[in-house]
Image (cartoon, rainbow, N blue to C red):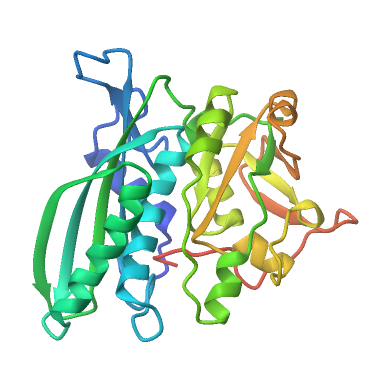
Amino acid sequence: MKLEGLGESELLRRILPYLTTSGYAVVAGEDDAAVWPSLDPDHPEDYVVASCDTSVEGIHFDLSWMSAADAGHRALALALGDLAAKGAAPKYALVALAAPRSWSVETVTGLYEGIRRLADRVDLAIAGGDTTAIDGPGVLTLTVLGTTSLVPLARARARPGWVVAVTGPLGAAAVALRERRALLLDPKFHEGSLLNQAGLCCGDVSDGLVREMEKFAAASGAGCIIRAAEVPVAPGATVEDALTSGEEAELVCVGPEDKMRDAGLSPFGVMTAEKSVRVVDANGKEMRLAARGYDHFA
């Protein structure tokens, strides 16, 4: 069986038996980030949040119209999205680069310049990593770690009847891509911290809103209905952009409606007992989307 057509969720299901699925506060299969108690004797009450993210040349960044520094900034921002979603403060990162031999030294140092530029802004230490040569396109992988004083709710904890909202308008990444313009993201650490303290479950929008809700469904068994007309749309974007555009800085949240409204967010969807994710228009009619977001193995 080939990977193509399998789908990312099905591939992860097949990998899961080989991962550690017990002994942590949030384990593999429950969320995009893992959480475990801190071993820091000065802060034994804290939890470590860890995640890993890969950016591939030609898929996640394009050096023909994007500077290497901007590509590095974006790669780190996308990796940090999982920490922001779990309300964690960033602490450390490891950077692994597989670079084509045809690249210039300036391209490599430019990537690290962009990574360091954002790292300095969010008080993140680049603790090390690895470099290797590759015949294909460049591949940049970042492992990020942060800390939080509370155990964040994993996607697997989502429940039918909870509502869905986002921290801001979606679709800006799709607009920037059409305009061949690098969108420099700012991870939503402040918002993520407040939302987690409010008892909400959050995720980043790395693969598009609909696709992210499918991840919630795969982890929790609870699907959702999204009311497309109520989803906030970024300037210049279409409703379909807002539903399917990935690599967004905003966070998607689920939780009880009273907690969501107390946090200042306006719900546009509701979690259901059925595992499917449906998008409906203003008349309640199901919408057919040209795409449902990004799936690496579709």
